[in-house]
Image (cartoon, rainbow, N blue to C red; front, side):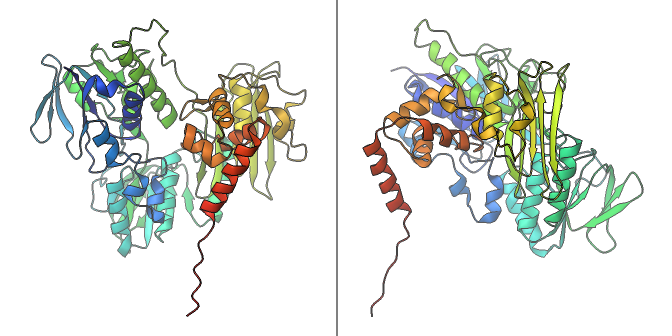
Length: 505
């Protein structure tokens, strides 16, 4: 069969998800697939990248083994990034000088760390936290270091701080804003988060503007701040945000947003009809989506659109129409969750707050003016209500007469606020893997009756993990073949049972 040529530029988490979607739709039989990756490793789990400092290898973090590419006839070219894109000729020139022609092209180039252009940012010992190679460089530099500083107190900055602490360094976080994780939490939540992180031995410096990095008197570097203060350190890790990796597309003449990003439509097509863009490099209606779940959704949409070119089914095609940016994380061992309109930007929004200073817990609800709809939430220190609150918001479930009951621990209303059985079947339980209630019910009915089995069968709770408690609730209320469940639970228990070897010699 004369197959069309499809090139995928990038083999990160989103690029790999796109390949999996192609295989699921049997499209690998219609295209001669080539994947160009700038990294020397196959796609790996960047969400859990910090586990690399806890003993997991690049192979442990890999999202697919080599057999995936061999079995589906995918030409994976590691450490061979695309260097030039020529749209008029429909060719890609790689860094190794190879010229590859394409019929369709998918850009999954992701993003790169933003390094503030302060004098001294390029000194030896100043690095970024993004790839396995970056982590290896940090680990190497940390072997003869005592102090490490992370510039940036956002989500990735705290991940980087955790990494520095894991390798035994005295760790400092320097943040320009008034609080940590300014996008996800409010001022009160930021105060609680800061106290908890400082108790773990990490030094936090907020409202600090780094003016320059120079030689230190006692350590290798000194950070000089705008207010006249300074901080000395052996190494500096920049984690001050990301920027879309759009250089290839920009030089090729594709339409780029004012602040970067490849402009796409609802089918993830760029300004060229044969070029798609997915993930953090894509700009949809002026927005860049920096979480994995929206990127996965783009991958599904782009693959479905390509499938429609070969399978004229007449069905409505899925479109990318934005994404919920709610997220649940564990940073330095501290639970943090942000749901919907966490900052109460909706006109008429009303807030309910609960704070326990002794236990260092902070919880906030944002509800509509009529108190009937949940608009958002912030949880710091404990996030067990996350899955429930997310489903209440996404499915527009009526709030109880006293909404504050959802976050007051002595009332514990969140546990009973939503019966998973009452959710509509299309309700998305796992946003990362696009797993619906109906998908989970079908898997349970087929005999997959434990959380582990449902993860394997559906992929639910294998991304960020924030939906795990809701999956367990659904499992608890679902009708399923009792004997099948007993057998599966027994088999799982046997698999997890430690193996003891008795030496009688």
